[in-house]
Image (cartoon, rainbow over all chains, first blue to last red; front, side):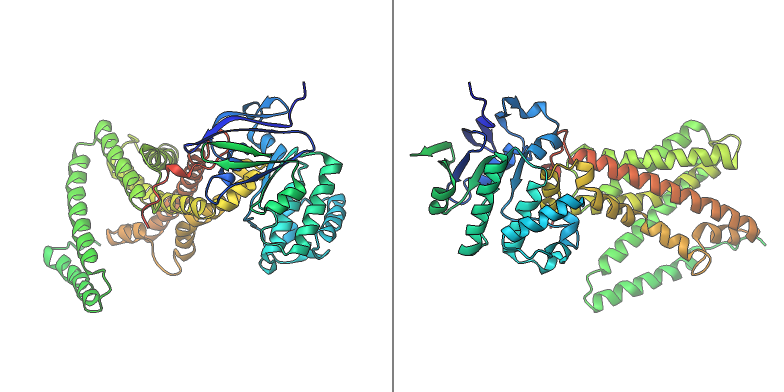
Length: 206
Length: 267
């Protein structure tokens, strides 16, 4: 029997749910739904930022069996709005030489300036922050990646770069991905399966 | 030289200055006139009352009475800390944190001063125990109040940043480190300012009181140095305790930020 990378069973939070779905290793599941329905809160429940009832399993092991820091290293969320607490971009990333070289390569692939690590955070545009937030979340090499509207602030060209980048990352590292988007065409390009979120559950689109 | 005794007329002249300030505030519509008068009257009543209590205590100084008075002072200080919070921790937890932090810091430092440094016999002699504890409580109360207010306000205002750091696999201690550091600095600022100004800008209150009552200046200075060290240490320990205990309350065992325990409607 295949053990799902991520399995969400009858999860309820804040009077919403129950929600159930699973994602295999290397698979991308799309998630859509009207604004305010709770997609971000579902991600917060999966990453254990808010308490929830039900089961959330990573490769068959429940969330409660992991320490909170272990869980969030393996199951990470890239939020729609990112936060930055140091003045310099590079200070938010690990400092080893390999990471720095890899960081510059990834910046180029995402259409960012290769020297962006030396920039001041207050110089960044919304789109640059979004792409850098993705890179920051990938540092821990998560097993599950929850993307909350990752390209909402990007133009069509940079959206294409980001989709290609994530697709390549998926092929190389095989994380399970859940991708929230209001763009049905985008989900058609990136997702293997799609779910629509309602207040009382998730409904798979065929 | 014997201390010059004050009568009601002397105090009334000083009070008149406060009344003038209140009138000025009303004339300029600064909105503080009533508050100045109210807290001036309240302070007078409190100090007159405490003067009577201290006279009784000094005449009948049993350990039980001293402990009772100390407990009342501690509980009142805890209440004052809670009353100054913009976003206080709901329920009894916030009160217990502030009271507990002040108990741990002020009482322990006072005991060290009485037993080890001053070595008064008996250690609970009210003329030493009550004023020392009072000074320590008053200053630690200020530091803890500022630190806790800053802590809850910053965790609420910067919750996105804190949760982002938690999402990157940080513990609650790592995610809140910058905020806790800021709170420590804020809590210690009044006593650091006092230490910087002591002797240069102003003569501290205790020293002034002793000199007025006829104590030789060098002896008064020694006591003032002692009390400044005790207050700094007490405030530091109190602020560290309060920040740590607040953190334990505001993050749960899964390192989630729990802002639902804050009273956030007081804008």
